[in-house]
Image 1 (cartoon, one colour):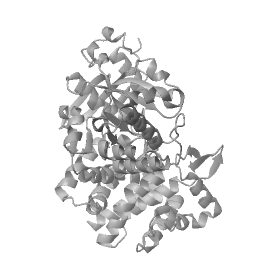
Image 2 (cartoon, one colour; image 1 turned 135 degrees about the vertical axis):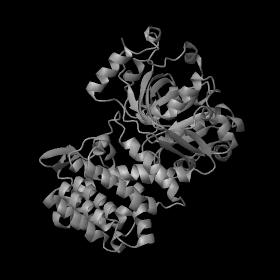
Image 3 (cartoon, rainbow, N blue to C red; image 1 turned 45 degrees about the horizontal axis):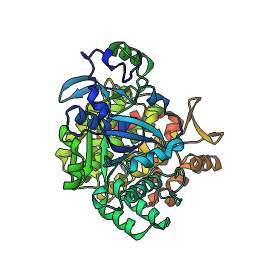
Image 4 (cartoon, rainbow, N blue to C red; image 1 turned 30 degrees about the vertical axis):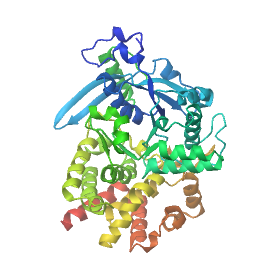
Length: 504
C-alpha cells in the first residue's frame, strides 16, 4: 500500500501520527523554494505540527527549481513520513509522523505560471527558501523569463506579480524567511532582490513597497535530517508502518529554527507558538555562531579525516576512540575559545555536549560524503573565521584545525576529470568531488603536486585572506598533509592525539 490521501484511513494509528481530513482543506499560506529533506524535516515539521493543533491553519506550495519531474511527490499527494529517532533530555524518542504540510509541488521549469498565480493569492503570507548556500547570488536577468534562472530573480518575479495584483497595498507584503547556511541570509537575499529590481528598471512605487511592506528575515536552521535510510532500515520501517513511502525521512529529535524578527513577524509566523524549537528574536547571532562553529564546523573539519579513515557515517565515527577524542578536543580546545562572538564557556560546553549526543545518535545514518558536499565553501564559511580569530587570540597553530585543513586538501586532490566531473582517489578507490572548487583544485594539483598545498593555502583570492601571514600555519598543514600521504591518516591522527594527551 502506497502512502496517499485516499489510503490514510487504512493506516493504523497506534505507531504513526496520521493527519485529519480537515487539514487538506486548509489554504496555501506558504510558498517554499526547495524540496530538500531539511525543509521537510524542520520548517515544514513545525507547520505540520501547528496545523494538527489548529494554530497556523495553512499549507505549503513548494517550488521545485531544478528539473520538471515531481512524480515522487504527486504519487503520494505530497505526503511523507518523518521518523524521529534519538535521545532527547536523556530519554529515547521514537515517533512516526505523516506530514501533510505540503499541498503540492510545482516545477518552475514546467509550470511557472502556476507559481505566479499563487503570488496573487489573498492567503499567501510567507516565503521560505533553502536553495543551498550558492542559491543566494546576484544574477543579472530579466524577471519576465519563464522562469528566471536564479532564486532571487524568481522571488522578485513573485513579489512584482503580487504588487501588481494588489495595487501595492501595504498589508499584502510577505514575510521571507531564508534558511540557507550563510550569515545574514535574509538580509543578503533582500539586498539582491532590490538590486535586481533596479536592474529590471521596475517603478519607484514598487521599490518602496518592496522595502516597506515586506520583511526579509535572517534565520538559522539546526536539525540533522539525513533523509531516506539504508535499504535494510527502510524495509524494517515499511513493515512497522504498514505502507510504502518513497519520501520517508529519518530525523533526530533535536530541532532549532531561530528567526530574526519583531512583532509583525511573530504574528505572521504563528506556528512558532507550538514548539520550543522555534525562536523568534531581534538578534539570533548567538544561535548561529554556536551551531555553525561547534556543530557544522566540527562536521566539516572531521569529514575529510573520517573519510580517509574509511568511516562511512558520523555515528560510526563516534564509536571509534580516535575520532571521538579528536572531535571532543577540537571542540573544547580550538573551536569554543575561538568563536567570533561573545559567548561564555557554560554555553559552549552545553552545546558541545548536545553535539556529541547528536553525533552518536544510533538511528541517524549521516554520511561523511554528504557532509563533504561543497567542501571548499564550507571551509571558507565555517572554519576560516575560527582560524583567524584563534590566531588573533592565541597567535599559534591550532593543530586540530590544521589537521582538518590537511585532510581537506588530501581528500580534495582532484586527480581525474571525466565529462566535467572531478574525482579523487584514496587507496585505489575513486570518489566524486561534489565541490564547485573542484576545477580549481584539479588545476592546482595537476600543475605541480609538490607545491599543491602551498599554492592553495597562499591563494588570497581563493580564501579572501592571507593565510601565509598566520605564523607556522602553512608549514604545519603541509607537513600534516605529507604525513597523511606517507604514513596514512590513522598514524597521523594517533600521533597527534598522543601528543595532546602528553600536553595535558
